[in-house]
Image (cartoon, rainbow, N blue to C red):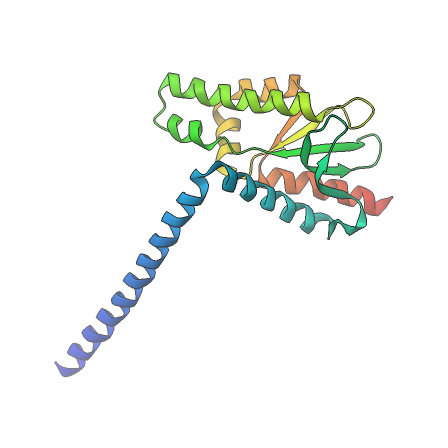
Length: 192
């Protein structure tokens, strides 16, 4: 019984340690939620995520394949520009994180879904109008969604947004698809 008692105490000690870790993790999740509710911080999160992906694909931007925070001739600032070989050319990438209406939409009411679709269409329009500049950039741009859940939502339930983006010459990319896209461009550059 003494051995059983010691085993119980040891397990209780492990449970107590696990509870402390869970409490710590809960605090970090609440902190992350606080970060993502602020638009500016969320924008910074998307930009940092984008730069991380580009840096992993191409190395540091000292090699001139991409630049971040590039001011275009129209005065707008693209989160990143990829200097891809012809026929692709100069591709603008802008990070968008339409979180508010996505969170509202998760209860699946029609009005909130419409708000989400409207929000994404606005971002597509903005990117199409601001970052596709004849003679300066290619005739296509990339809308980077730094959350895979947003990208999956659009692909699974909103084919009309994909068609709309296609008509506006905007590629919608989540982290995984952006990594694939820039990896292909990186391989082309290495082969050249």
